Length: 479
Ligand SMILES: [Zn+2]
Image (cartoon, rainbow, N blue to C red; front, top):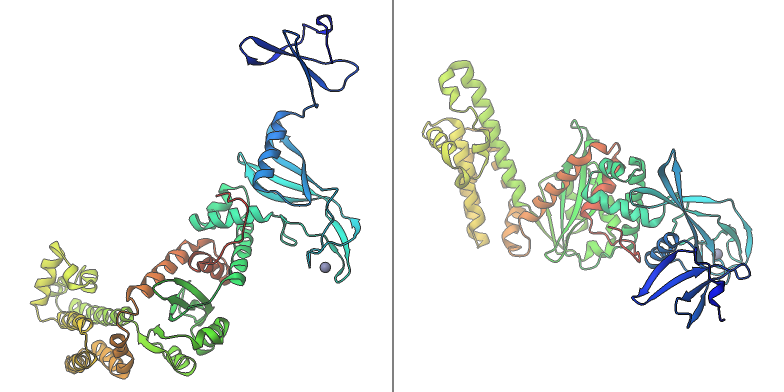
């Protein structure tokens, strides 16, 4: 199409400077609905299709890159304002005319039935503004499932939140507390909880329990008080190649552990080579009955903590006794709790001087501490026989120490001697710090748990942080 210079309205504005010598003018003609680009030199004209506003095009382009759904198209992006301030962004979605709808149960194409009213799904916020997908779901008449809602790829059932947003919140909930996550992304605590729940459920149903050879079983205290419900039983995988939380259950009874082992499945239980636990009787009984083929190891960390508790009991009893008799001698035990509980070689500085003075005093606490320190040599043995001989010697000394808490530990060690000596049989296979490290991580999660109102919420948080669960696939990671 040739345009003569007289047709050009020079009142129109130059909108683009392509090359230095060429200025382009936009001319709108009455007869044509399309825009015409005219070169000022009038040598060439070209017709381009009418454009929509550039901003809308860009948001849709990005959406098509990061969240493209087969069978659906992004129609319009609207910014809704309240009193002049941006309130929310609505992205309307329409079905693709050429692609047939699918059944939400079997995901097979099915003939249409009717159309429901439009719904909104919360999407990942753009520029800190709440963003929603708007779509009117259709229903299909599936040959197998009858009249059901069509498959909507960004949604998971009835939740009014897109899968992308649930994954986004769940990933952030690992870095921040749930309350902080809710506050940062303008949603509720409940919204974060439901998102993490969905994430964990997906992970649990898709995880692989292959090559589980060593497990650790332990009890954890949470909440206030010593009720049975305030304890959890946890099962970890403690293989060198994978350390993760496998199962959590309420209480620390035989029934709980049996439930846990059942949840792992008979194949996993049969394939176990090492089981590491503490001396809690219900666990010992269940492990002996169900995983008899595995070498049962008593955890070094738990024995050390029993010894520490005994030393602390001796110190407290003696401190009370001394305070009633003689204030000056009682001063020796003041502020000594942590130096006494630490490993002897780790106590330095002024605490070391106080400890040396205490040890020279022949107080009962000093004798208890000495017994505890002597026991640490036990772990240096390589041979099971020599370790057994040392254990006998130590128990003999403890039984003659006239310290009831130490005698109690000695009796306990004697009862479980074969299991304790299994530690040397499994040497090199189980690393001592693993269960302790995982326990510490659990404590971090439960301490951050001021938002966890229920046991279920905490269980989900534990799986989420320590379970190493697979994550739902997503074409784009928003964080
Ligand atoms: Zn179906």
